[in-house]
Image (cartoon, rainbow, N blue to C red; front, side, top):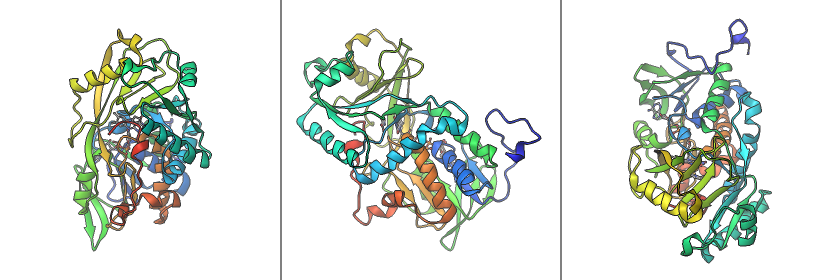
Length: 406
Ligand code: FAD
Ligand code: PYC
């Protein structure tokens, strides 16, 4: 890091006061994905004349609002291979960043309460094993042994019949992931500009030439758009559309409790999932709100429904208080898989469609999108996630592995 030779290393990252007139690459969105792309552009491809433009503060979007579950127990071969690569990258991140992201491998249970969902778990287990991903179907005796605190009768109405157990399932500190990528990108020369909103995309003869911001015009031939719940606004500025719908996804945490829940528990049927953070809070979520809404408001209705179902699984937590709840704007695709790659505008690359599942993809998205931006060639791993799949009738069909109910 020669540029810092004569300066003390910044605690996290430096931001120059002024924007330059032009950059080799402009990244819109300072969430995990945008920052990871900036990091790997510098680290893997030596491209450092890069500006990350973030309208709020880094990690303040869905990256800082998610429930931090990392796993690769997907349903499609393309999904399994893609997320498996991300899990492997996650495992080395603390060392890469020299910053503890509190990556904690916990084991992940997706509960089945019906014969139908048990069949889907069997299917997922077989696809996973084919790609050397550690997943297996387990039955109530094994679950009881591993998670004795859980009431498998679930209040009597929907008893647990089995589960997909995925040993590598993990959690991590989401803000540390954003800050680690930001710090690493900045140390290598990328600029991170917060409170800098992109308000227009400049295009000439079908090619991107720059962006308009609340701080003036920036010229560039390459733009990476990584704005999750704001994708429709940006694609409208660029003059094309995607089938993405924005739906709120809410979550909540309890007051801290002594450590008792080692594993991650997900029940699509009960619209509930729970893990215990390194701080002892129960981190809990539910299914998507059932309507399109571009807002991060959270509702009492959500907390009531969530806690009602969570208590079916863990009745002894009834005295625990919920201390915070919030929502993120999830960018949902029709097939519950991301949209990554080139767009109808030359030089304008899209990283989106991360819905309720994109935190775990942060490292692999950064790796592959930075390769695309640097070389203009689509890496094989993300080719199936191209935008044009929706007009080619090549949908991915990842809904059954999307974890939360939809
Ligand atoms: P974001 O973090 O949203 O970053 C996009 C950024 O773009 C924002 O900071 C925004 O301010 C900025 N921006 C927008 N418009 C502009 C503009 N015009 N100019 C400049 N900047 C702009 N995924 C999992 O894998 N596991 C989970 O357990 C999980 N749980 C979730 C729970 C909840 C409640 C939610 C809401 C999501 C969850 N997700 C989960 C999904 C995951 O959070 C997201 O898919 C992921 O964080 C997306 O990251 P990102 O960097 O693409 O987007
Ligand atoms: O993708 O594993 C996931 C997840 C869990 C809760 C929200 N998303």
